[in-house]
Picture 1 (cartoon, rainbow, N blue to C red):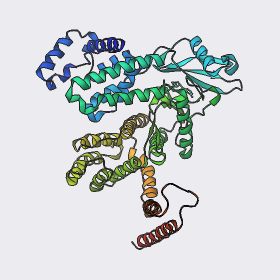
Picture 2 (cartoon, protein in one colour):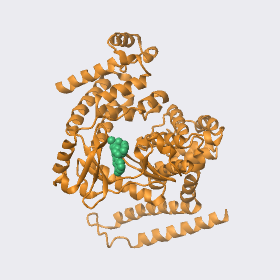
Picture 3 (cartoon, rainbow, N blue to C red):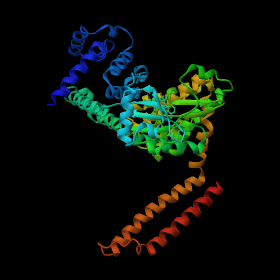
Picture 4 (tube, rainbow, N blue to C red):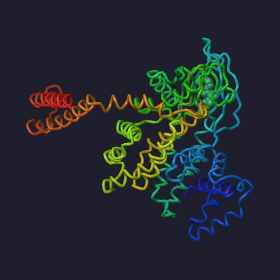
Length: 501
Ligand SMILES: Nc1ncnc2c1ncn2[C@@H]1O[C@H](COP(=O)(O)OP(=O)(O)O)[C@@H](O)[C@H]1O
Ligand SMILES: [Mg+2]
């Protein structure tokens, strides 16, 4: 038994009890009598903070106090509206990750140790912290060549803190899994392990630097949004240096009043940037709130903070595009089909009943004026309803949906009657036209044929060739010729058939 972890767990439990966030009173009606009695007893110790706010708000406050691991846990829990309900998830998502900064001297010492050079040499001007969170803080600085930069430095000792609290959280998950059979379905230990894993990656600034560089490349292809360049000389495990982003922070209400600002175009850019990243490139900035966005009039948008990058594989991208398109065209049978095809919904469920459930999601949303349609609400409800059909959501899609909620919020605050579908339309249609066009279908079928024939060729070789020697250069021979001819033939026939259709 890890005594230290156990002690920290008790302390954390106490913080939650004080906020009435462990077994909140709102949960009482759903609890069995024994647990309810226990909850009532614990509530005797609740403090003043327990009286204010909804359970999600109380939990958020308690987690803020418990440090980086708890904050991360809260952020991840807030993405599971499908499990905890939209109101709770929404309250939890407002959890703040802002702390008083640590002293500049410590930041300088950290940078010198990590980069192996005096700060005065690297950054002749090194200013105070501009922002501080539980893992790191950011400083404004100027390099010797005059470039203005932002230097992000991890909090001293934060790795130790995260390691300790991770063990505590893991212990809690094990206890829950052992003692509360009802919670086992949610796989607490596996869940906590993924949270800890995500946090460990965020503790390596080299990883964030790579995320920034990759996102800058991806964003440059579409032009909807930009990212600051990485100054690789200023990157180490605990330090990240990025070009300074000029422009006004979107988190400042005064920014919306900037002269010459085209709020409609900005809102379009936010939506299109996000969708193009996710659909076209399969990699998206997963933390696109106002605090991470900067603008220059009329509609130039730059993002910072690349700690969380979401990724979608080809299957998820296709799934996403197809459901958006299916809902746009109200083809519920098709949307249902997509869920079964992707294997998201177990095959034993009734497709027609599923299509009916989808209609229940789609019709009220699309019955409204276009500027009131919410794409993220559609996805949230879709994921809620699909839970009834035992749909197992891929975590990437949960992250995407959460980001979409954020992105839509940003767009709506920029431009209250913004038409999201009109903004999304060109990106979704472009994707559909490219990926689901007859030509793309032929290409895809040809790819499949090649794969199948390759397998056959391999089998044929295995039968004729001696088993041990694999000569990559001398291999193919007749099997490849046959495969090539067959694919060409199949592609030709298909192209012909499609041109007749
Ligand atoms: N390249 C940059 N240019 C200007 N300001 C930046 C830059 N990077 C970060 N900042 C400022 O520092 C703040 C915190 O940095 P961020 O990367 O968002 O860290 P956190 O993960 O703590 O939110 C940002 O909200 C922004 O105000
Ligand atoms: Mg940030």
